[in-house]
Amino acid sequence: MTTSTLNPPEQGLGARTSLGRFLRGVFSAFDQEGVTYAVLRNAQGLPDHTRNDVDLLLAPQCLEPATKIIRRLAKQHQWTEVARLEKFEYRCLVLKDRDGARGFLSIDLVTGLNYRFYPYGDARHGLNQRLRHPRGFWRVPEGCEAAVALLKELLARGTLRESCRQTIAHGVTRDGTYFKKILEIHLPPDQVDALAAECADGNWDALSQRAPALRKTITRPRWALLPRAAGYLMKTIRHYLRPPLSCFAVIIGPDGSGKTSLMQAVSERLFENPFKMIRCYKSGFQILPPLKSVKNLCGSLLGQPRGKAAEPEPGRLHSGMIRPNSVFLSLLYVAYYSLDLFLGRLMLRRLRGQCALVLFDRYYYDYYYQIGNRNVPGWYLALFECLVPKPDLIFAIDRDAEDIFRNKPELSVEEIKLEQRIIHQLTQSRKGSRTVAGQDGLAHSAHAMERMILEHTGPAPSAGV
Image (cartoon, rainbow, N blue to C red; front, side, top):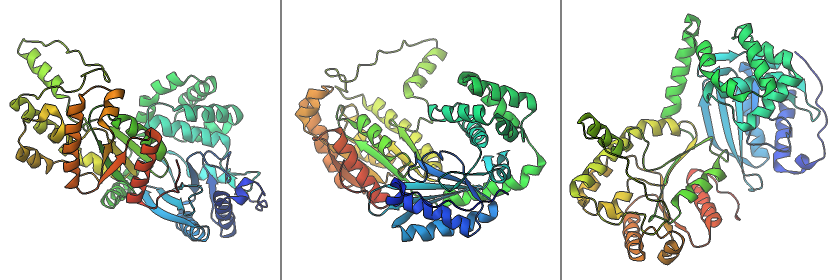
């Protein structure tokens, strides 16, 4: 094991900020108390800055001591723990800066390099060859960082994000020998050479095409993995039964009021701050195919194919619903899409277990106020509402009807006002309902919604847009 004395703290930005003081204290305490660790990725800005979170590779016996040190120093430096995420050989602590200067910080503690319970690397290699960074903390070699980023992305996503490509190409070029050494643990030499060559050339499409074969190699059945599979299963069950920080929120409002734009803006603001994952849905979990596709399929089977109907262009005059559907069709729509939402309960449970923010810009409540469903009896809507998952928060957009019409004349002003009155009555009887002012622009609306979500899940950030 490489050893060295800790370099003295630099008197730069990080030494004067809450983040810099806190992370320097953590790294120093790790060394003093014998915690074997190494920064796994994005070490360039540490300890002064982070891109999203701090990823630390730890020896397994150091997980609990490291957790205690982080919690102890968090209290000293005015950081509050708002969530803890536990998975197989992985722990994440989500911290909130009490003075609001930094916001949220996620610290990932990794004791194994795994895809589910299948190992794709040996953590001991990265720790045995760790290097002392000029700013005093330990980091893995660049080749190790590149190999871990490559395997993690291809195994989990099947492709490589733009943010990872530069790290991978740089690591292969600067430290190709160690890059191959990490890959050779579980991959054959010819596959390792091909991966290294394509990374060096920046042939990202070819790498994405290799993802299925790579996943098949890593996940091949082995009796030796049975104990790991059992441990993974038990950890996963406990994790889902005690979900960490999460939020399920829906946005309601007349067509053209800005629901989709608001959902996108809020998701960008809250990704990794503090939510580890954000999922945005339109109208349902899409477990069942769209009802129109089912109707077209049935028509084809009966020898009566239907042409694809032209979709109205959003934002154009009267491109929204302009008349009620028939009673039968309305009842069918409500029942069918309620079933999709009901089946999504398991998916929602899984997402809650991943520290996720789940957002809908259309939800079941639309059936109460949209003109297309005016023929549906209230008791029928109330009956099926019992089946669908209840959101933590319901955000109703409060915006002047004439303003909505000027920007997107999808509905008439009279229809917008009628739907707003129904929405107001609806939210009065629903737990978790909130009103978002839409008159002052998207940025203000997104900030207000962000604050209300964070108030529901944990401490709120400081004021200001």
